[in-house]
Image 1 (cartoon, rainbow, N blue to C red):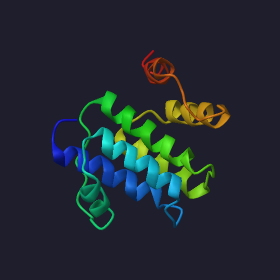
Image 2: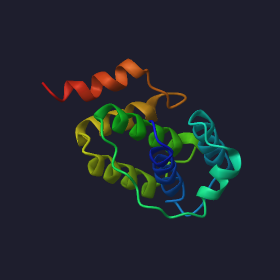
Image 3: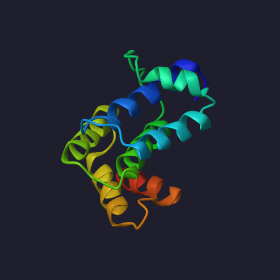
Length: 133
């Protein structure tokens, strides 16, 4: 992730997803804030993103699309409540990203069954790579 526009686009997508259930939970905001910090986005700029609607840039590499899908899935689990709207939205987002629906369903199932919703990075990538065979 090199440009500010790419970082902004990813965060805007995450912000939009975080409110798909009609509210922004405190833990979702905290998670988004951590992601913004990791992307070197200043706090006031990050907070301003909640008032912006900018076009999203397509994510070019498959690895980056998988990363973004996983970030969204973590965000979905961050408030401890899995809403049906979130489940439907993340499946559609994954399809729009060009990710394999079978792999994304497997990842979401693994995350739901995990105590903290975290999956090892190797397992994540392997699940998507298995679909190539």
